[in-house]
Image: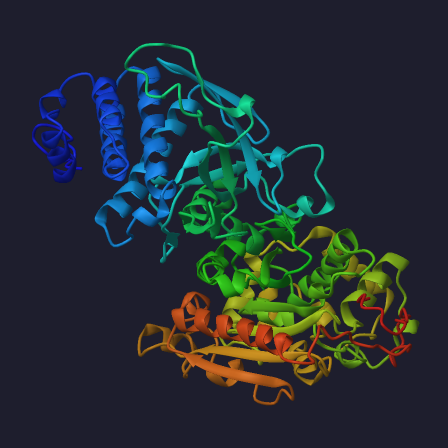
Length: 638
């Protein structure tokens, strides 16, 4: 097609040549349906494919110029049917090396999008509906069917067209080519949600691909009925009229479909629906991040685990934990890249944790333990999903410390950083004692298989110096209830706690200082024997970043602090040329996380290696806090 012709959109040279051969070139500016009917009438078995392509092309051009919606709908439908027939009715006659093959694919896709735009003006298309199109010569009925293992008919509120949007804010745009129309589906809440759907955020959007299947063998009620005997009708009454089924495919489920014994790739777009979701005002990164830092209480109602895709019990979770002055939005660059890899998305599902980053990180770690327990109870109360026991935690900056605290045995190390006195002698109400017990006495989560830390200050950060600590205390509004509880605790237990004990830490900046009493216990605490550690460090190029910490590192965390050399279960450690703020978005960091994920897949698929079940012997902790024993084979973390 020559859409840029000064005479307007014109057919391709080969179509014009066919019209000359048929002595129909002079009809090009006349009635388009009449011209198409004439080409169809002159078709022979030897010329059928060339005629089908010409009819598809002429119908599409006619529809594009048509102002009457009914006529445009009919012409788009004619283009679709002929492009579909060209591609699939006589596969042996189609050469994928012929430019017309790709042209037919484009005609199919563009005609389908044009048709869907017209139909959606009469009301949004939703799965389970049966729609009727009234055209100049036909009444066409078709069903709308959702093809997805995770999304339900009730989930789809409406859709937008990917082609209407341009992706900004994501470095890479993942669009695969084939047949179909990529859509942005907008999810709606509904009464029949299962427990997993409670972890999906509001106004979530997700990718779908629309494909109109033509089946001449369908049931009579699905066929196109001819309601006119006009000589220009585009359906031959002597031939079986085709039936249409509008299929809405989830490209995360499948990338190909089968059409008449042929494997056909679907056209899909994974990045634009993600960018559409991230563009809403409620997800402005700076606003959420600042609230989480300066007003921790204001984020409490938003705190928790989030899913951007349907829960799949057969996929391993990758939980991404943000750092200080940040939010889950900071992971979207890595998420977008990792999800584009079929090997990754076939084996993993991605979860995100939002927490108030202004509070000391041991409090966030305790809340994450509780939230993971609650999620497992909601999704898999009988613990029959072994994939959930292969969880990978990926944490940036302080989020790496929060993640590591899910993998270690506290023993008495964290409590002894507070005091040398036994927990039992503490004077406090039961609620306060329960909170302290869950914060300072814990065991490694048996479902966490790997922990990836990125730019984490394992030995503290000089950025959290006296000035920033003072400013943090002035600016960060600590939760009033916590402040009152701490004051009451100290008043009831004079001389009980050490100076600068973790209990006295007020803000996350306090907990990240090089002299923080919380960091040495975390370095010394033994990890679960099933856990592997992977560490990514930043070494910023010579720039102003170096001056912030006065040594090698990412400008916030020095290399000496970021290293995990002493960890007995460190599997890999990588230095990336990046500053702290962009380290987790750097291509080398993303490639390293991808390598780690695929390494786990490779291990699990090796002969004789299944999903391991960690056998925890019945025991009590050697600390003084009352603990819950875990029986053998019980994977639940307490």
